[in-house]
Length: 517
Image 1 (cartoon, helix red, strand yellow):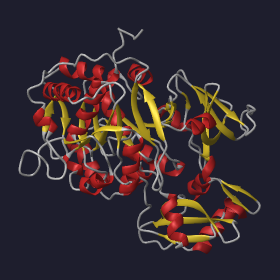
Image 2 (tube, one colour; image 1 turned 180 degrees about the vertical axis):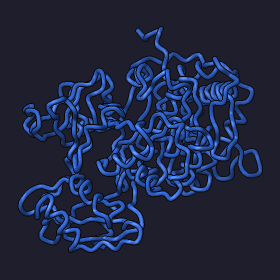
Image 3 (cartoon, one colour; image 1 turned 120 degrees about the vertical axis):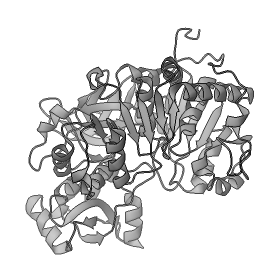
């Protein structure tokens, strides 16, 4: 029996939009304002059009989209039609995108204006039954090399939900983990677990009023989930095409932004921007950060500059939210200390275990395992890989961490990022946290490089602080004095910026390749 009372996340969002039709729901990157009523009507019509074209439960709608209202609308419409949704991330190579498109059994590929220029590179490499444009081409109508404008084609459809019964066990999406070569893992999520996200949104407090989110990072990632929550709560999503620190600061002041999501490297860019000291940030209520290691030094700086509005979040595609560090709990960051990722979220069990599966005592480092109702259904078409990380309902996150005596979780690093050097093990985040306290270092990334004898060595890429010229000898002495010889970098690479992966994390693979070229 299917759950007749179940209301999916997409339908919950659309009902909220339709209930307050005159409010502004979306502000585009070009400044156009779209009302909730218009957005809901367009999305319902698109859902009907997709159903008429064969989209239904068990099919896949793949999105080649940027940060546009059409991208949001297409994701909701596909969900209303019962299809699973896949995003093709900007920044991945075209051959990888083609392999992903094929691997997920794409029924319909939807392309928005932000990706019209790059779509012709992908289309010859794929065999998809239907390719449609989310909007007109430069001259109106069909988009050359892509196809019919499905938004225009849907104009005569009903502005109401399609008669499709979506249940909690139906597929919602396949989200691919970050990667630059090969096919990233596809995380299969179901409607039921995602629907529960709306019951306790991160940082939500009715006393803070109507939320205004700035989506300056890809909607295909966490900014999309935050957009879902904000629209369902009656708020507004302000879109930017990409992250640029000056534009982000200007938008916060201009649009009175309350909510923002940033990976730590992007937060560092904001803090280093020359206009931050003269930007009005008083509207901010929830600045969420996570996704990679956070520097205690820079987080303390952010608390002073931005205010007590930082929320540290630890989560992953395989499990959604795992733990949360509230603004009031940031006082646990001591001088030179590590930033905790908070306490486990409600309904999440976390255990720190040895490689043989034994639970470890407080303070001892081990592999982080978790169990919750939000854990993924599995990796798409990879049963062996699923079985390797999901056992008896517990997910092995691949992260290394420990609990303190008060139940706060600390992450040391990804297990796979461990650098095994002569004399011991080095977790890059430990060295990064230390190096950013050096006056010559603005930002850095630590990574391991193997020599021809397969011995690993500690390398560091550094963005120099203004007016500074870091020297390897100085950084080696600085690290050796404070952490020990094995942690000291053996090679220094000065860079203008730390490269990022498609999901916005430091791209250590690219750094490693550049170091060995």
